[in-house]
Length: 220
Image 1 (cartoon, rainbow, N blue to C red):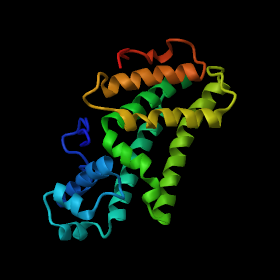
Image 2 (cartoon, rainbow, N blue to C red):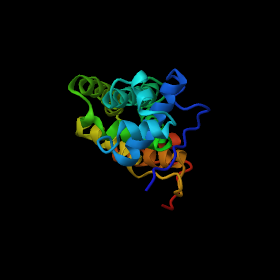
Image 3 (spheres, helix red, strand yellow):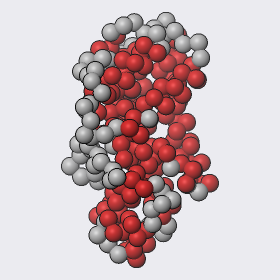
Image 4 (cartoon, one colour):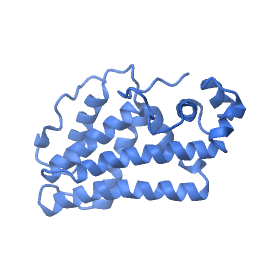
């Protein structure tokens, strides 16, 4: 079964990657890795999807693992930026947590193929690249933990185990990439709103705070 196209909402996905041939190869790799898995995908598969010869791939990426690393690094940096923007924003802890979850889930749904590769192919990276990506993940963990700690100190949240709750929140959000389908009944915005409401309930925030549930549908 082919992977559904992403709902990126971008005029030119991966616009920061140049030249254009390198960008096309990266997009093709995301689609192939998401559909078949990293280990089952060959460089010939990637080049074919990009409309190039296998030899053309090596002009831009020395190995298949280098291509995965580029996808992983850029994807993690984008996801981290979403969380840091919320963590550093104004408002109460509940408002910032709702914003973080809404935005993080929306990114994982709208970029579900990229997110699937970024989040579930970590072990395919070499030791040096894996260490780099794990460090980025720790920064994402720190951003969410910071918000939850703020909420506990302010009396907004009732969270006995902040590290465990942080892990649960991130896991809930990340898993959206595994099941989200563009042909489904919910949009990325609706899933984000629903999950923000669920997370605020998880941390014991006052019902209805931050308007987290606005626009969340009920049908699956």
